[in-house]
Amino acid sequence: MSQYLSLLIFIGLVCFAAVTGALFPTGPWYDALTKPVWTPPNWVFPIAWTILYVMIAIAGWRVWNVSGINSALVVWGIGLVLNAAWSWLMFGEHQIGLALADLIGMWISIAAFIWLARPIDSTAALLMVPYLIWVSYAGALNLNIWLNNP
Image: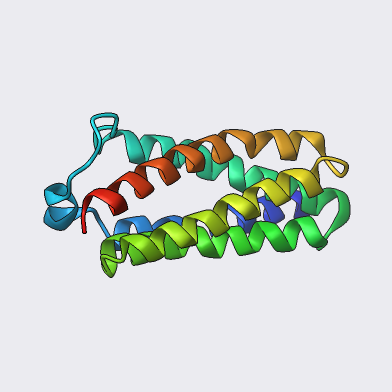
């Protein structure tokens, strides 16, 4: 039973990060920005993030179950903090450049987690690959918005 309790803790941590997306919605400011034609419609984001957040929680939980707190899990936590900060920077503070810098840090933390988790639990590492791909896409989108909205 304690194994499932720890899963609930990881889900709770990820939910805490996810709440920032709800606290700082896109709103009229974001709608008015010049965005590339390959920007997905707003309804795609909550679906994608829900799936990714579940995968992020399971990946962290799997590493925890195998080896407890270690460098992979520390990097996982750092990435979660950066994830939570992005919505605040982008939509709360309207700091597109700082949001991009945050996203670069997030990308590095995800890649580092994958690298560090691979020898511990290869499934945990693989669970984070879609997240890395999504954040790469989000980074390209963030960069384009930053460059086209002085």
